[in-house]
Image 1 (cartoon, rainbow over the protein chains, first blue to last red):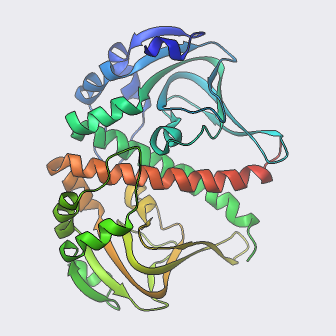
Image 2 (cartoon, each protein chain N blue to C red; image 1 turned 90 degrees about the vertical axis):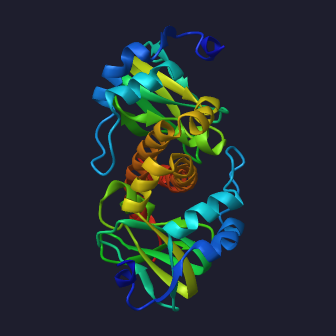
Length: 169
Length: 169
């Protein structure tokens, strides 16, 4: 079923064979335990891996979406249309970063378009899978969520620090 | 020990007696199970409740900080100093919202100042307590983290949607 999500991308199966690679790129969060080899081995079967060609659109602004992805290899362009209809680049995202977690969690439309700049391998985790993990593997789910809170905090700091300069006093 | 965090505020003990009230204000996240009465009863003893008078500074920009808070009653002003040294209001936060979760999770300095506009009751959760919950009560910790991811997503959507209008194409 998951195969139909990205008909134009090469499906590379589940993420079990990518565990070490994912662990190497997800980065470190000094405050909390990092993902161990065991965690990733446990998580691998729950994620699907795809290879997007250069230019491949992974997430499209305005679409519904119930998954997030971790970039395993490659580079992703994140663009958004502003209120005048102009397409703006809001980020270039390297391996180890999560994308798509906002719609995955809050159920709203995709906020931005994510497209592969170069050939990009990514691992996808769906909302139903995460919901299942919260019930069946809550410790692992908590680690994933901690990583997401960390990522979102950093992004919110960056965007709010820029935005505050444009606000009226 | 937690009593020393807010020497100027009235300490109201742990959050167990506030479980129903907290549940009423934390709001609903349709995609995931909400906090049940049992969850809040379980969480209550891990949180401390304080009453800040009008004008009381709960979090100060630039300080270190290892806790988040949920506003139980009252209203909180969130302000930040811009690059020109001007103090800008970035939000007014009602009951049910979390504040302080960025520093709590990423360990960086407080991003903004949070002060009580009117008498404000808030429940505090520290980083060591959350770390302990991930290990001992992972299902409950996952629910808290889900709520934080949801909150951060909504804030990031708002700030990024504004910011994109200021970016160069």
